[in-house]
Image 1 (cartoon, one colour):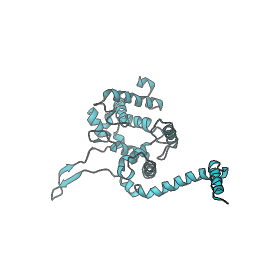
Image 2: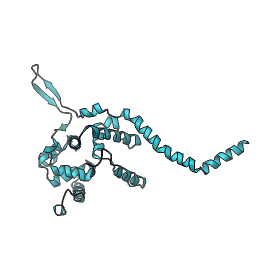
Image 3: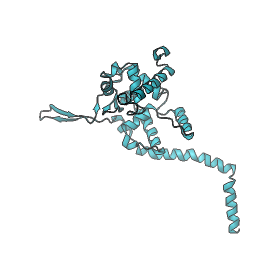
Image 4: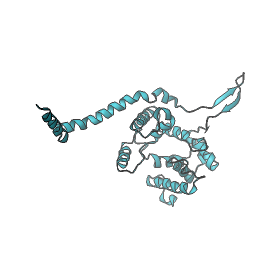
Length: 253
């Protein structure tokens, strides 16, 4: 067959693909996606690492007889158990960041699909669950911050591992004790002291909504630097709490 004829036939198939070829191509996409995700598993934190719940511990200087002489904290953090955190804070967090937190196992497929559709339409929308956010906070070096498919897959894989190791309450406790709030304040206890001069168990609804509102942008919604933006964002959080039954309309008003 002349070369021109071969090229003409090839061009025809490219322009007019067969139904079988299209079906095979469509079927291959999820398979390749799954293989790529599996290939990334060894490059995510191990179950052993996750069990250790890596959190920077303060360096201690001890005397020869073992007495504590000094303590140097890498960040301003104090861990408090979940039962010592205001329920308003937990309600505000779940209503705003992940209202199906207790229904999924690390990934909210409905929210992920919705976020993907919004992204394709040009309107970006967050799709990460609380567990996925925790994965990013605990393992920034392993997962990264770049807005790439690889990073999202690593984040998702790590979230599934976290859910396999920890209970929901443990995930909430770890998240609320490690999330940053500017001024080198890590965790809700130090945030409560820094912004409201109170402990985490004393936070009221408005305090809690303000802190949760900061999660979208610590500096942009900082109540000290940008009080008007912080107020608007706080009201958005309160609206989410009403929407998902964490706050009555009368309380919101």
